[in-house]
Length: 109
Length: 165
Image 1 (cartoon, rainbow over the protein chains, first blue to last red):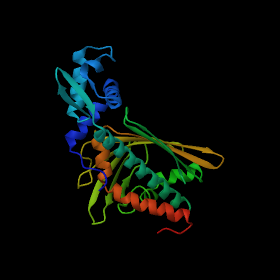
Image 2: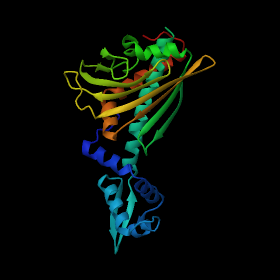
Image 3: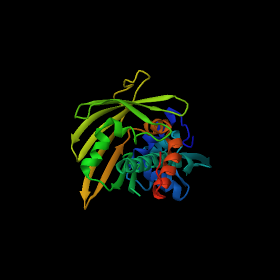
Image 4: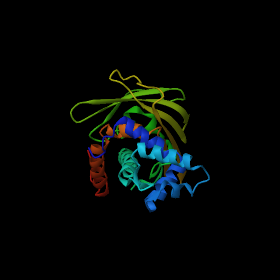
């Protein structure tokens, strides 16, 4: 099976994490370059604590990884988890391509 | 090729697919309305669908199962929410247990279908909205990947002008 079996809780966490626009932006920012939570916080009109909470949600969903470097916490994106989500949608698209082709076959009967 | 475009929206977890078919909306409507025609295309070739109930009216419900290569069955059900022949169809699609009845009536994927005709070509727009990635994954686990490869083979057969199946 090409679609990887993700554990239920894991997929729920990924979906919840992606459902917030600030969190999606944090992912984009951390994909551009690794940066500290305080650097990330400068992009948003919200408190450091609020940004830290968003990062924690993303971390639980394995979408980002946090690493302590001296006094700073560096945030890295996890492209693999993002690719999984995209792959699932791709697979659904392929399912519909197949359906459309079968409809055409039926129509030409 | 009937496939025109797809738009993925990760924000809202929707997938919009547009396909075009050389038939009238009335003819295309039948492939949804008539359970015998529906089961010829809903499931992939290796996981064909069998509809045991198909109440094609608002508030109506359907029951179906898909049979895998080893005879295993995956059960599903629909709740039809909008029917406006031959233009609009909306329904919720959910998972069912071995008795064929819904497992969780709230755990459904919503699909909205629109048919529009231009110069003898009918454009079908399907918008699928998922509640979670988990849902999407469960749907895909119903033999979809395996079916996909065969469907691609069928498309090639059609392009080559061969009679497939």
